[in-house]
Image (cartoon, rainbow, N blue to C red; front, side):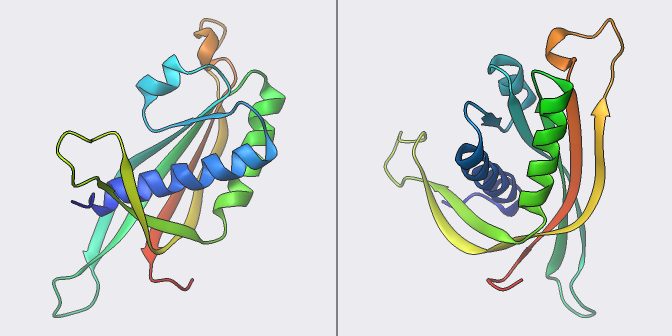
Amino acid sequence: MYFREKRCVQKSIAKHLNTELNSAFTDINVVLTWKDALQASRPVVCVNLESTESSLREIGTTQLNNSHLITIDIYAKSRGQAMDLADFIKDKVRDCFDYYLFSHSPLPGNYDALEETKSGKVRTVKFLRDEPIDFGDTSDERDRFRHTIAIQVKVTPNAC
């Protein structure tokens, strides 16, 4: 059974960033939840689908045109590393990249192995935020060099 669009968008972005980051850096952890971000060693990139906005595609249809707000939180070892990773990530998500349908294996009990099928492109529509997060001197060590990026994306057919 395939996952629905929201999960597939989040996982497609994480897969894309993991591939790109591993080709340019070493030991960058890409995760999907803040819980995992807190448990992984830094630097960590956390991809989170924050919300989905939907509208009807055209008058007289029931098909939805979805737009997803994605936040990408960077937990770095230094302010410079956070800025470098933010610039790199923005550069890698500005162009279209592959959208995958993810599904569990049809074998009962085999929920760890995911199957993936290319099914279009993820297109960044808008960059909404690119800024450091400063919790002040009392912040937890993990949040000391935190940076956040927010983008709005849409799933499109194979061409962008």
